[in-house]
Length: 377
Image 1 (cartoon, rainbow, N blue to C red):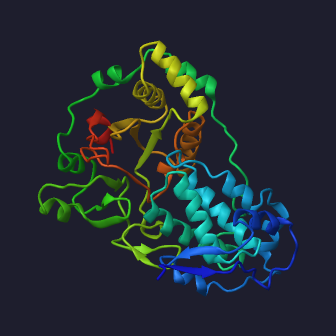
Image 2: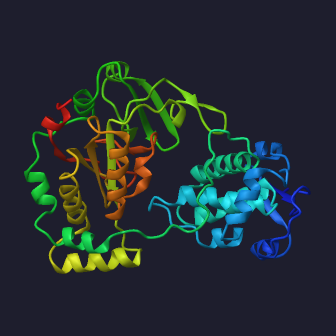
Image 3: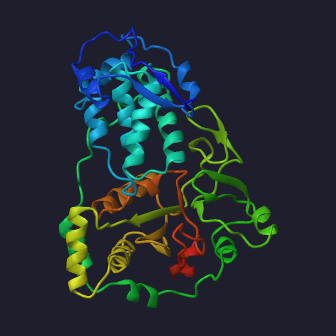
């Protein structure tokens, strides 16, 4: 007896405008049938056909540049901060082409997993993307009147500036030598950065988060968590875009006190690999590169601390308490020109907890701490 359910490829009857894209779609599926596993979200069956006169659907059709097939073929790899948005853009394209949500879930999830996304996370992420894309195209997200980005992101990295900083005077050693006394435990770090009644969101892994008052967290003794939301939450829980209650959502995300910047240069990216090789010839490593960039960025905004991810990157925490929202946005945009990963800029994004552990077993140690910055406000 098989554990799989067979579905025939179907097209929503309400979407009749031809694109020529359904031919591309059939190529992705061997021009036959889909095999969908039993863990395919049955809630996607509730997404009814779109009205082909829906305003957002017409806007999307007028400005889109890629077919669903192109979105799938160009999914970025996991870990560079672009896969989440790419999944959503693929969901938009597929729904607009009339592909059923269950079939789309299988295809996009399979593509995301092939790019390194964990299967469990991809399963939920693609489900939520399809629900949100269906709502937006059908005009059921009144809070969003902006057409989502629908084509491949343009590389806006200022490689000239990155190289200038990379081969300058700063490295991991100079950053560490300029540090003050490091909080020696996760509990010490939390006490220094947050107030006792701040609502802090911690997580052992990316799928299981909890939000509690700091006092309640500390009352439980030693903390063994690997991820956290950098900024305190507004409430113990909020409603996700898919309508579910969650301890971590944009709905209950608090004000921005800290901007977390991560530089993630990887050897499997051609431009990154060339720079890493040149650095090695000069006696420097990828962590020296990240440290130098953080030393450079702190001339624009005070740097409170730097956390080793446990792998190949450093997370810098910058003090945003005394700046405006516009100034914070300008800082983030500049950081992106230095190849900062924009994923950490999300209001409820999980980042590494100091003294937690990476899945590879390495400890996420503090490399730099400036108590004067922490106590400034």
